[in-house]
Amino acid sequence: MAQERYIAVYPPALKLPAGGNPATHALEQGMAAWSQQLQQWLSQEVSKILGQATDHGQQIDALENVGKIKARAYRNAAQNIDATKWTKVAIDTISRDTEGVVDIVNGRITPNLPGDYIVFGNVRINDIPDGVSSGVGIYKNGNLVSYGSSTRPGAEADTSWSVTDHIYMNGTTDYLELYAYNGHSSALALTVGYSYMNYISIVGPF
Image 1 (cartoon, rainbow, N blue to C red):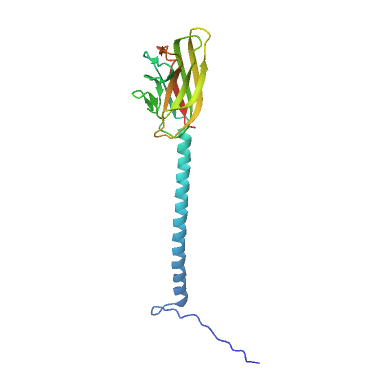
Image 2: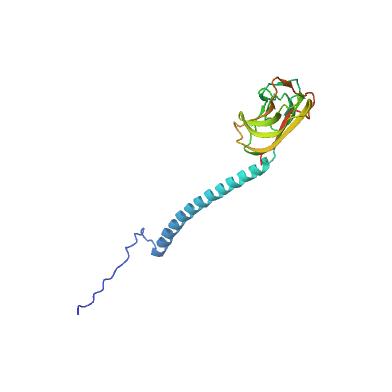
């Protein structure tokens, strides 16, 4: 049987300054390594804390913005609704606008915060002939997205329609407009001069 052999392994010698103490030198090396690890840990934790604070701040901002925008405008001046087509109701009077989102020049509302909005609309047209179909709708970015009530009266009449919906808006480029439909072969006039007719209003975001 071969004789077992043992090899003694010694740690490398510590390089000490003249008159240095081995225990003190080892402690200093350990403290330096620990300090480096502590700095790395602190850097990671601070980043986490800042990230959480940012997320929390965004959540607070979102909560503070709930229902912040309240806007309402209506058509006060005379306007005709064109024959056999949808016609935009050109809002010209502001009832309320908490965030300056009503655009009277272009007859639209452009919310400046993203989210879902509760949208209301109303129109009233004079002297709709017997059997003529008419109605109200909300347009988003030039397209019909909400079609409200409509009627086909059995006799000539002044008729009102309403529409309600919740619509998502991106808070930058999305805009809303009020439209009326006239199925008659001739233009028909809106009933104007009242703030409670021919209006569009929004509340949001949610």
